[in-house]
Length: 336
Image 1 (cartoon, rainbow, N blue to C red):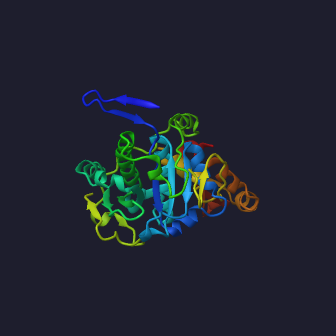
Image 2 (cartoon, rainbow, N blue to C red):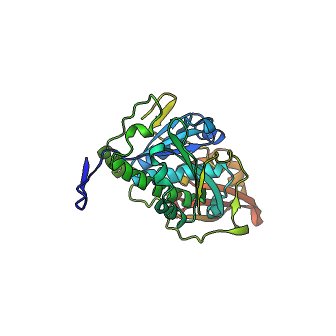
Image 3 (cartoon, rainbow, N blue to C red):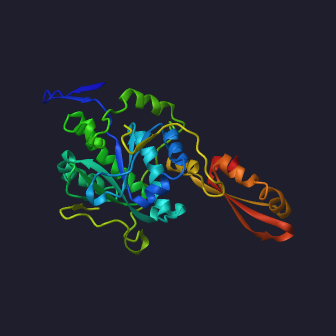
C-alpha cells in the first residue's frame, strides 16, 4: 500500500484502493451496449486492462431504469476505457464520429452522499468549468447516493469525470469514503488491489498510448454546437448546476477477444482513436469486376475491415470499369 505522511499537519494519508468510475447509462443505451455476448465491452476491458462491472440499476429511485458501468483501474485505465465507452454511447446517440468535437451530450456518474459537499465546492466547479464542460449536481437520495451530470463533447465529459475522480480519490485516501460506498447494497465491497491494477495497466495492449488528445479544439458555443434532444428526466428538485466487484445482477468483464461486424467502424478502431490515434482516409480505385465479383461477395472486404480495424466504404462506378473504395481508420491501419 502506498503511504504518504503530510508533514505540516501530521495527518497520515494512505491509498488503500483506487476509486472507480461509476457511469450511469440510460436503459436503451445500456441494453444496446450489453446485448449478446458483450464482446465489444470485453474488448475495451482487454485493451485498457481495466475491470468493467455491469449492474442493471443505479439504486436511485428517480433513475431506477438506468444501468451502471463501474470502471476499476488506474487513472490511465479508467480514462482509456471511459473514452472508448463514451465514444460508443455518443455514437449511439447520433454523434458524427468525424466531427465529435461539435456535439454536446450528457454523461452521468453515481457518487456517494459523503462526496456531495466536495463536488459542490468552488474548486471542483472551477476545475470542470475551465475545460468547457457544464456540471449539474443532484441532491442526494436514498440509499445515500446521487448523480452528477456533465454536458459537453466526448473529450470534455471524460476530462470532467477524471477531475472529479481525482478529488474523490483524495477523500478515499483520507478515509472519508470507503470501498463499500462504490458498490451496490449487499454486494462484495472488495476492490482490486492497487498493485494488481498497476500491473494490469503495464501489460495492457494500449499501454503507453495517450488516452485522448490534448484539448486543442476551441470551445463551441451558439449555433455551431449540436445538442441532443432531451432524453433523460430533468434533474430532481434540489439539484445544483455549476457553470460550464461483481454483485447480484452485475457482470465483470475482463480479457476476451472482440468480434464486430465489418464495414462498420469496429470498436477496436474506436478504442484506438479514443487512445489518441489520428483518423485518416485512403481512397483506392480497383477493377469493378474484381470488387463486385470477388472481394465483396466472398467476404474479403469484410475480413480486411475486421482484421485491420478500418471502415471500408464503396464509391460509385468510375471510368474504365473502376470502382472507388475509401478506407477510414488510423494511418497505420490504412497502410495494413
